[in-house]
Each structure stands twice: as C-alpha cells, then as structure tokens.
Length: 193
Image (cartoon, rainbow, N blue to C red; front, side, top):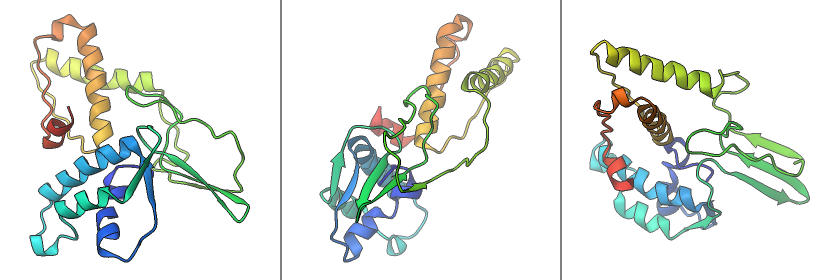
C-alpha cells in the first residue's frame, strides 16, 4: 500500500477480511497509523446503509494485524520488487518539491527495468510553491481586510494540514491578523491532533 488516501486504502479491509487473500500487506508505519483513523472516519460518515457497507469498524481493526509496517515515511512510498531478475519500481503519487509537512521524494539510486508511477498531475507544470502560497495568502489577507470571511473545503487529509501550516506561518508573520481565528472542523482531526 503506497498511500493512506481513500483511493488507495479504502478497499483494503474488505480485501483482507472478506476474500481468501492470505499474502503479506506492506505499508509505511506512518501510513498504517493514519489508515486506521481515516477508514474509521470513512465508515462513520458513509451514507450507505449498514447492510450495504462492505466492511465495518471490526473489520478495520482486525485488518490491522495483517499489515506489516515498514519504514517511517509520511506520504506516498516507492516499492522495488525483483521478479525473476527484473527490477520493478512501483510508486504512489509523489512530488520532488518539498512542502510544509513532507520532504521531497528521493530519487532511487538504481535504474529499474520497469517503472509503474501513479501520476495525478502527469507532466503538468505548476507554479513555484512560493508563488502559489503568496496567491493563497493574498486572497485571505484581502478578504479579511475588507471584513470578509474565507471558507475552504479541503477533503484531502494531507492537503488540509498543508493549508493550515501555510496559514499558521502567515499569521505569525502578520501580527495584525492575530485576533482573527482559524477554525478547522473535522472529527478526524480531533483524533489526530
């Protein structure tokens, strides 16, 4: 498992508890810690009936015993497998750009025969991080200065933390904003922080 995001991990309790699969499952220790919290929250907020749920809290807890934690990387992981002398590198969606809460992905020190890469953004070019963050904080400052309020819907767990870290740094550098509160509403956040 190369990421704790729902598009990667949501089917794992079903796969481990409701099928005949008996093989090993590997994920980083950080992913394993977040996996339980994220999927427990997913079960709680799902809008399907109990009869239609593919798994429940018990299945999530039981699946934890079948997962082997390796490494301590937060974020996506890369796995290299040697299959009959063929080196296969499989990656989650990774970034070579450092952000507020994750390091840039390291480039492996070998050349795989086959490389399988998840790529949300493909070969798109993004503005530099400093430019994106300035545009983001400028909108906040402008809106607040005019008496407005800002509401952000951030569903991705890592993305929400990144935005909060950017705002925290911005607030620290702008004392005139210290009396303006920032609220983060998430039952999942309460179980993590």
